[in-house]
Length: 178
Image: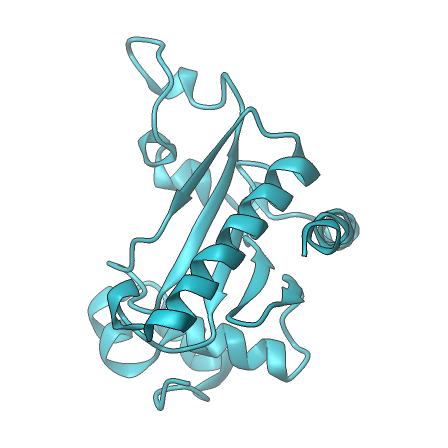
């Protein structure tokens, strides 16, 4: 676990808009994991051997889920071989469960780390026409062609009731596959 954790919600809220400061003070993923361990992360779905499954805060792409690695590493290749293989296997299970739980036409799975340098997967269930309005040519493309202000619009945050419904659906699919 990252030694930079434990800064709490006040610091998270203060630095979440300042990328440079954020990189030097806190690991947001480690904080989210600590909130899970403390029973304070409402987006938490399921703990697996190598990581934690959480519903994304914003649901412009309905069913958007993250798989957070239990180990604080900045690159996939820094994980021990056996752990890495298990992590990749579990990510595959999670993405299949997301696809089934949320009726995806296509799945996008991305491990980036430029903003939050702690290994974690972004798992996006996609629909055939989900970004066409943002493309001048009307063709499908990656989620990142959607304007960030659209993706992170507070109106895309699920209600408490909807969040519980989503977590239950995803838990059921993970249990079937696990």
